[in-house]
Amino acid sequence: MKKTAAVFFVLSMFVLRPAYAGWFGDVLKGAVQGIGGKAVNEGADKAYEGAKGQLKNAGKSGSEGNKSSPSSNAGNEKPGNQARATGSAAGEGADIVSAEGIYGKYDFVPGDKTIFSDDFSDTDIGEFPRKWTLKGPDGGGNTVEVVEYKGRRFLRSVPPSSKQDGLASATLYIRLNTKGDMPEKFTVEFDAVLGSPAEYPNQYYLLMYGKNGWPDHGDGTIYISGEAGRSKNTTTSVEKNDGRVHHIAVSVNGTFVKAYIDNQRVVNDPDAVTRPIEYIGILLHANHGYSDTVMFTGFRVAEGGKDIKSALDTDGRIVTHGILFDTGSDRIRPESLPTLKRILALLKESPGLKFSIEGHTDNQGTKGLNQPLSERRAKAVLAWLVSKGIASDRLQSKGWGDSKPIDTNDTPEGRANNRRVEFVRIK
Image 1 (cartoon, helix red, strand yellow):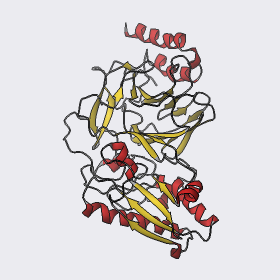
Image 2 (tube, helix red, strand yellow):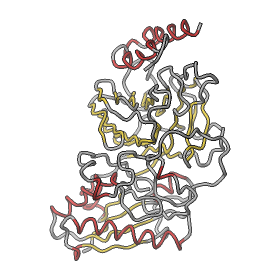
Image 3 (cartoon, rainbow, N blue to C red):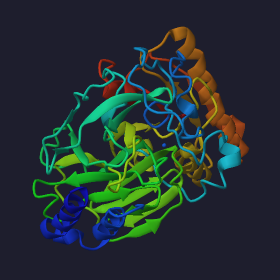
Image 4 (tube, rainbow, N blue to C red):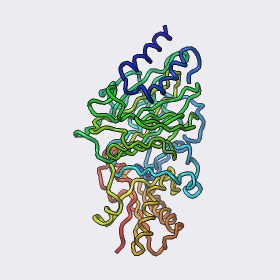
């Protein structure tokens, strides 16, 4: 009976979704093989935060093995004003100097203005997160729940009761008023567990659709697993099926989409989406195999900002959200390199340009933590620029703590926008 149902499901996917007969067919091929036997990862949004330490293990998630199971008996502690822990296995434990070679071709820069953010810290264990909905193209499916995993809260697709059963897919969307379309430029980021102990690839489909989105056509679906990254027109093989937390980053510019798993670009497609984009969501799956670690966290959508030179010319300052630090530390994370390199290039192109490097936090945590930490982080950025040949007399640093917000501190999105590094022109 199980075999018959599985065969019917796979065949129905090709009947109902003919546009997926290419790359989506390859994804489902493992499901057919598995019927009779074995089937086949806060700077960008939390830069310059203080640290209370409630999630002191969050930054270690990318380096730990996938041996512990998610727990539904988590405590009620919430994160303080800590730096974002991306869980990126590639850069975990490496400072920016030692990782520069690894991240040499990494060019992802997160959007400047956060318009959606959820790390599930405000959702009770076992519950459905209120910032998400099942309303959308083909929404629903398998049950999902918030769990605690390696010191962080994740949204997991609930595994079947028997390891002989496959994990059904689950599709959900963020509650977001796009007013007809998303911004021309925006980014999406989240951390996800790739691979599983049962060796069935954990699969994540980032969905970016209009009202006539999937299942009518394949535009707007970005597939991520430990084995491959795919869009409508491109496929890239990866070797990250290791059961660890990895950072997924996606940039959209018009119809052009680039996607990354940690430091590796896995999608580079000029025609990956169709405008307008009115829904953003995620489909969780496991290639019809058993897995109890199909889960993600730290889902962030941010609007793209001005070109840094344009911002400097019009505003006299460059506001960045792409400089990341280890939790409670002034150590710059490797993912900060694209943003830092843009600032470095601008300084080299304009020998007379001078900057005051200024760190800002939200109002979470105490001033006794936030103020000195923001100062140390600004100094760390200054030191990196000096190490790249910029004269120290062209730079100075300051830390402002939470004294100069640019958005409300009453929402996660507003607090994310307040956590930033600014480069203010000195006249």
